[in-house]
Image (cartoon, rainbow, N blue to C red):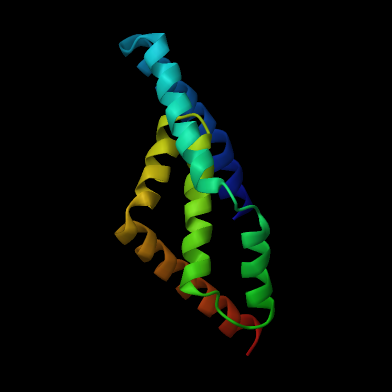
Amino acid sequence: MGGVLTLVLFLVPVLEITLLLLLAELLPLISLFTLCGVTAGAGWWFMRGEDFSLWTLIETELQNRRLPTEELLNDFLLWICGMLLVVPGVVTDALGFLLLVPVCREELAKWIRQQMRGYLHRHHS
């Protein structure tokens, strides 16, 4: 898992920079900066009022052998959406906008809950 994470942390910025450089050739620079600014502003809007305490709440639920509520997971995914939009780049923006789609967010939340259920079953049985 650590090797995959290292690879992702290396490849995503390389991909983002490459795509931004390609876009800079196609779009006026002011348009590119405006696009980055607008998506960062949208991301900030989704993150407002929330902080990393959402992760602490999820962790606490798991430590108490409970699955986080759907509402808590939804809020956390919207916060992640905001983080992805704040980071300049095409791929992160696309993933952030994907999390704005309720069906995508619900399916991801279901998958996360299944993973958490498996974790609780393996570690707290």
